[in-house]
View (spheres, one colour):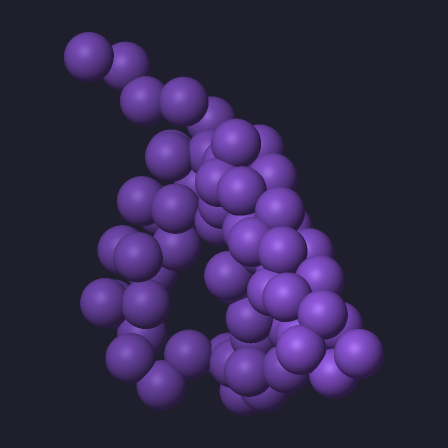
Length: 65
C-alpha cells in the first residue's frame, strides 16, 4: 500500500524526531506556537470542527440573550 505524500512527510518527520530527540530549537518553538492541530486535519474533520464551534457560539448567544 503506497502512502500519500502527506503521510510520507509525517513518517519522515517522525523518523527525524526519533533520530534527533533534541530537534531544531527554532522548529520546536515554532511548532509550540502554531501547532500541528489544524494542518493535520482532513477537510471533512476541519469542516465538522468549524461547524461545532459555530453551533457552540450560537447556543452561547441564545443563553446570553
